[in-house]
Length: 167
Image (cartoon, rainbow, N blue to C red; front, side):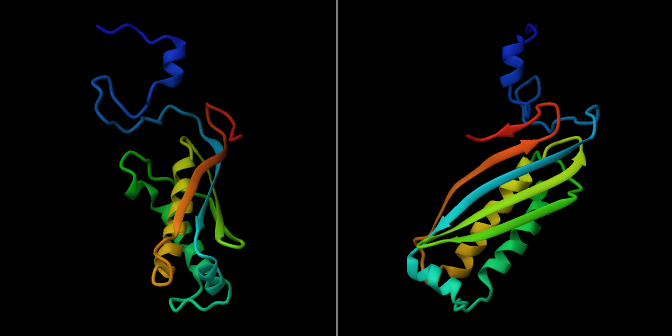
């Protein structure tokens, strides 16, 4: 029979595996409800000419930034359908902001929020990623060399593990 993990081992143990090492959804039923907020960021880089098309409203598929914003919000709400072990969540707020970073990028930031028993990091990360993928999809005819980069969690608050802020 395995021994109890030390406190150091417990803090770094992966939570999505059962005692036999099989993938498992975490049981959050005993956790208390707290306000939880997560912020993620990323960017999509492209040729300056592609960014100029977006800024000038000249992409044939429509308002790139507006569509990407909506896609990111919708994706956050569907995260548990995409990531197998994520809990379905009743999000209370999702924002996705896309900012032109001339000469060749769009910065994306997403915030996800709820009052609940589990965090919203995956929802914020999914929102950023799908918003970037939507920009790619809408602009790929002009620039197949676009790069989705630096998608990361930058802040999270709430829950047992408290606050996290990226350096």
